[in-house]
Image 1 (tube, rainbow, N blue to C red):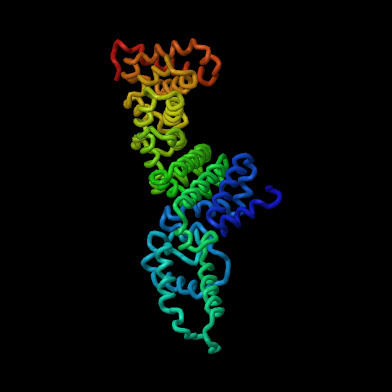
Image 2 (cartoon, rainbow, N blue to C red; image 1 turned 30 degrees about the horizontal axis):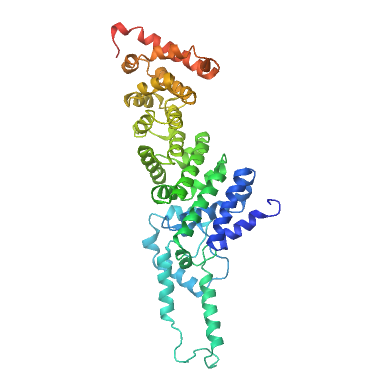
Length: 431
């Protein structure tokens, strides 16, 4: 299929096809990319990423028109009127969007400029009102030919043809707005699903996604979208953050702490983690863990919700909470000391001890690893002494599942040595 040119066919459909067909094309992209990662770059070369983001952004963020392409026909009188309208309103519209417009202009030209669909519709309506259709058989053509049904239909055809020049993804703006809610929701769900599969392990594609307004779209859809749209958005964010965790440049450019889009995404994921009763929980936990190295020392609001998930939860949830917190407390995280103290203050030690002793095997390993990290970095903690963490580590060192894991065994011995050094002074008190 790929060699036969399916990428260009899907690109054309996503640009010009009916929305229901576009949704199926987006699903097909997700299936091909999911089953054959080699397809990812080929789809990216055909502008599939930008088209998918455009569908995701439609009616999600205000300037969705920047992420779709108008058809490449010649400009019409309505087009000229829109351009003129843009010029007359340039001073009021340029502020706040200037930098993003400059970045987008070379890649995503569009005759609408910064105007939203309602503004565009108003311009078109105003234009049609200025040029009403003839009534009572009058005809204002240059030839003076009397009005007849053929000319009436021909003029209507020309008028519709002109409006179609300003199409977005194959239908007029008004036509897209008039699609039924179920079709729109399915289009967003399939677009998010395709972006999820395309982003897996692919830094260039993740960079393309994050340089658009996709992150902001994901934040909005996590909050307000239908269930399947929310789930696919969460999975896409999980894959993008997984790549960013390994790609320092991507992490620093896409997930700056002061970035409004990043902040919006993190806020929504934390709300889901605090709520802790949806299918979005695990992908959001993983995504927050992947971003552990982007948070400042003073930003500890994500620690307590994750610690609370260690307590009396199903095994998979406890496991993912332990793994996410380990990314905050591990030695590779520059702020591991601050995060380890925050975990202890949130009551993490007592939960981890229970999981190490009594948890299922899939939970024991990550729980012990996290306990070792906080013991290694905060060995003088009075809370750890009172919880008898050293006794727990000594017990764990004799377990077969620890001996078989060389990296965990080494970490355990280091943590034990640190605790023994500090807690041997127990009679003198802890400071």
